[in-house]
View: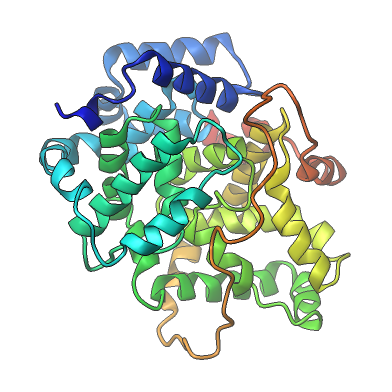
Length: 377
């Protein structure tokens, strides 16, 4: 095992892992029965349990994964065991080789989680190596802005395990199909944007009309939502709650979750002008609240309700054939804005999540049984 694979074994890295685990556990609901079920699955081996009882396993992950089991659960979704033996031996060579993307990677990495002090110089070096390794592994896709946040989140949740994060990132790109989001000219993202806009017009015509009046193209913010898998827009604990659902429900669930998120954002956005909407969207991430996980669960519940007939949504996406790439507005480079000024140095300090007030106004519940019926029975 090389020196980079061994990272995370020392006391400094243990402290960082413990900090992240504590940070991502704040506001996590506790149930003795739920805990016992996860311990039982862990003792049997999550991958083995998932293989033998897939529907039960997915049902439990859809309820939300306890932080202590999150990385091992994500590894199951990302087919870690399928890729690990092949990818791990190649990692050192790929990670240490520069390429045509080196300069942009060097720019983007320091912009990744600047609000987290644990994402320090060494963590940035790990992320840089992961991104270089993937660009060398898959030169057809290479590197694209947004990948730094996706790979960075994997690095955080893994407890800064560099090689496992790389293998998970490859699994996310290949098995999950996320690489399609980063292809030149973003053809799949354009399909998702068209689907999002059409479904917005269908489900929230007043919001769609408001966007038109304010001359807002949803592409302006959806590019960032999709390219970063929501990391750029939402508090960290909310994001991992969304990923718990997304990783086990396919790439189209990214569209479903974006619609669920818009459902919560709509009441506020309808009251704002263009500049106000853009400012509102940028500031959501600045929240640091014990309610962040709850908000994530409510977004997931809304996503499920919106796509109760999944086949209909998938058919709509697949039906998008001719896509014009010439009239889409340009969008701000991911990660180039003001660094978020939250959490990290004082995990106990809390800033209200603006979505919590909206949740209360809408009378929504985070209870899976309330919002998702028999899915969680």
